[in-house]
Amino acid sequence: MGTGDALGMEGAHAQASGMGGMRAAGDLVARMQMSKRMRLKEAKEYVAGKLGCSTRDLSDPVAMELLRLEHGLGLVSMTSSTHPTEPGMMEAKFNISKLLDIPINSVERFKERTTGF
Amino acid sequence: MEPKIPTRMGDGSLVEMTRSEIKADLEEGTMVAAKKAKVPELTQAELGHLLDIYASAARFTAVDIGAEVVLSNDGTGTKHIGNRVQDLQSYETLLGVDIPELWQADYSYKAVKTNVAHEGQSMKIAQALLTNPVQYGAMPDLGRYSKPDGPIPNWSELLPMGKIDEARDAQVEACAMLVEDIDFVADAMIEAGADGIDMDTTGAAGDADFLAALTACRKLRAKYPHLGIEIGMASEFVLGMHGQLEFDGQRLAGMWPLKQLEMVTAAGASIYGPAVNINTGKSTAWNIARAITFIKPAAEVATIPVHVNVGMGVGGVPTCLFPPADATSRASKAFVEILKIDGY
Image 1: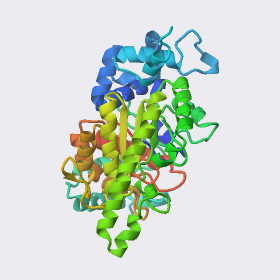
Image 2: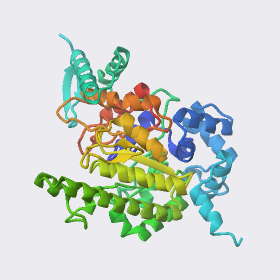
Image 3: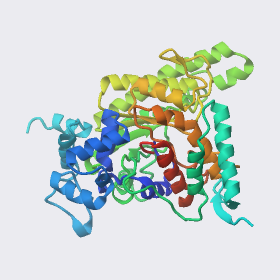
Image 4: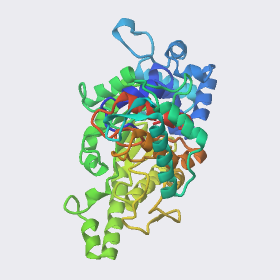
């Protein structure tokens, strides 16, 4: 559960103990907690198994940059190192859904609303 | 003479205490909680670990590499920088939060209902622009249904008049309306692509408030098997404003974290968020020992992720506008290392 008023606490928590979201693989572990109700250890092991890495790698932005590129899981876009030929946000979520073998709501809605194509 | 160490009070003020004084506060904090909730005190090893974390002049502390946890955050997208979706992007890219949350300033499902199309469109835009899972959050906020804010007789006025039955009937009626509103808003957000629904500060209005969240959660789980549903609590103890309400045959009034967890799990939630409020007149060491003692029985047996509320005024983080990183990071490390929690 969250950190309440957003006045700098997130920065401290993120640095003290956060997985880093899509800067590493925190978003993937979070998805397993949300959709499969997995506790942290199980969720980390599941994601690491799918990626073929150690659970420690999941919080390492250096290790995960390479793995996210390899699997098309999306990267933080920034001016100095954009990846226009790599999957963007929605495209990455399609790949995440496939890799983790879970439905992602926005991906399912996207499919529903583009059935003519 | 024993050297003094800078540390924080529950209101955030910087004070100096000796290691012995911090140790004494830790011992008193766990004793107070154990007595109140009728749970075991922390072990000497756990208190020693907390002492190492808190009896330090370091400006910042952190867990070991590899021991990081998932951050689900209420209150992200607060118009710090631009619009709410831009803020969510900042939380994703700059802060590295794992589950950003879209919300509106009037943080109540009843209030969101009147603005749900706009909120849904914002969620749809957020889903197009973020890779992280994005949930929608608000409070159940049962009090909004009582007069003068809502249509139901005000049970806080009825109770002092001795109109107990009328006060109870009013809460039951309000509870049914709240369940409908949470369900209505959640349907709209899920249609817009939300990855999860957060019922934050649950139980703020007592047992009927908690019952509404549990009932809504069960309804949502039946409809959406893969939806993230987070139920975060308002405090360590469910107030018995009604006193007789039950969920699955269990009386909700008076529940501490362990029983709260059982109810939240039975309702089908994905994540349980215990909350322990800060005593501003005591040190953060006293507060963290008290908070961990309350939550430990739940964290030990949980089968779903436990994301402790570790924000301003709860979970060992001081009640002040700008919580200092030294206090926040200590609470962060303490919960992860002592309780093995799954996130915040």
